Image (cartoon, rainbow, N blue to C red; front, top):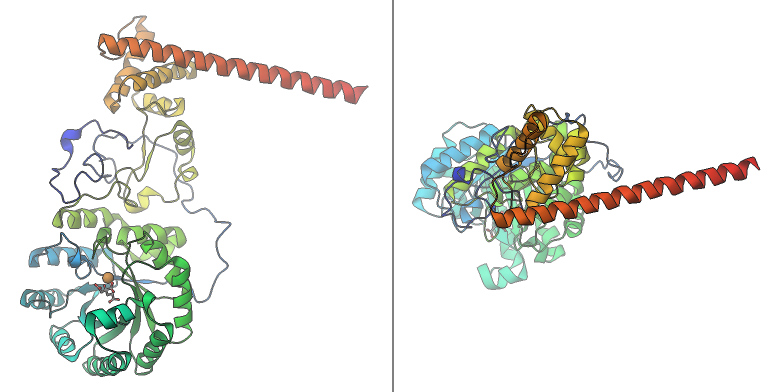
Length: 495
Ligand code: HCA
Ligand code: CU
C-alpha cells in the first residue's frame, strides 16, 4: 500500500472515470509539493545513469539515440472512451505538446466530422514547431480532405490482416496496393509528407506486408508504419518484424503499439533497437481500449537509454503539467504507478531502501526525479522505517539526538505504527515529544492514544524490545564464536 498522506483535504475531487485510481486521490507533485509528504534532503545523485553490464553491444541499426515522437493524443487519444476534446482543449494540448518538444502531432481525421475538420485547420494555423499530421483511411476522398486542411503530412492506414480484410473493409491485397499507390502519389504531388501503415500488422501475412511496404517504398513514401492494433505483439516479435522490414525498405519506419498485454513501452523500445525511427505515443497512454505507449513512460524508458539525447530534445520538466492537463480533460486520475509522475514513483519506504537512498539515491533509483522536475520522498512514518530515515527527519526538524536516542525513538514509531496507521505529523509528534522528554526529563505522552491503543502500544513495544534484545544477543554470540574461531586458527598456525 502506498503511504497515507496527512492532508487528504488537498486531494482532488474524485468523480473521475477510473475512480480513486491512485489510492489516495493525490499524485506526485513537482519539487516540494507532494501533498501530505515532506521531502527529506538526500545526498545528490552523482550519476543518474550508471553503466549497465547487460547493455547490448552498439548496433548500427539502433535508433535508441535518434528516435522521433509522433504524438497522437489528439487522434488515438480521442478514441479513449472518456475523451471528448473541444477545440479549446485541443489547442491547449497541442501547444503543450509542442512546447514539450514532440516532433509531430497527429490529429483525428477531418473525415470524422465537420468539427474535426475545422479543428484540424485551426491547429494547422497555430504556427507550432511540431509538424502537424492527420490520420485517414487509405482512400482518395479522405486524402483530399486531409490535404485541404493545411497539414504538413498525412498518415494513411488500412487493415492488412485477414481478420480486418474479411470482417472490416472487405478489400483484398491487390486493391490495397493499388489504392495505396494512388493515394501516396496524390499526397506527394501536393507537397505533403505521407506515411502508409498496415493496421493489425502482427496478425498480417508477412509476405503481404513486405510486398506492400516494398511497393510503397519504391514510389517514395516517407514512412511505413507497423501497428500492433490489438496489443498482441511481444518485444521479440517486434524486434524480428522491424529488423526484417529494415532490410526491405529504405524509408523511415513508424511504429504504434497498443497496451492490451502491458508491452507497449517495451515494444516501442525494441522497435527502436531494431531500426524503427518513429514511435507513436499519447499522454498517459490514452487511446482505444487501454491505449498505447504513453509519452511519459517512453521518456522514462529512453532517458535510461540515452540521457543526453532525451534531455537535449524534450522539456522533461513539463511532463507532469501535460499529464495533469490531459487527465483533467478526460476526467481520470494519473495512475499511482505511472512512470515518473505516479503518486509514489520516487517515494522510498523500507528502512534498507531509505538508508541507501539517503546516502546515494542511485542505489534505488534508475531515474533522477530532478530530470523531470520531480522530488524524491523518504517515507518515515511506518513500521518498515529504519533509524537512518528517522535521523534525517530529526535533523530536518532541528532536533539533536545521539544515534542511540534515535534508535530508541525509531522503535517507538515502529511500535506505534503497529497500533494504527501513522500520518507524517504523528511521526513528527513522536520525535518532538521524545526529544522534549529527553531534554526536560519529563514523561510527556508521545502521541494522544485511547486506552485500547495504549495497551496495544505497550505490547508492540515490548515485542520489539524483545526482538531487539534477541538480535543483540545473537550478534554478541556470533562475534564471540567468530573470535574463538580466529583464536583457534591463530593457535593452529603458531603450533
Ligand atoms: C485504429 C487504428 C490504429 C492505426 C495505427 C496507425 C491502430 O484505431 O484501429 O495508423 O499506424 O492501432 O491500428 O490506431
Ligand atoms: Cu491505435
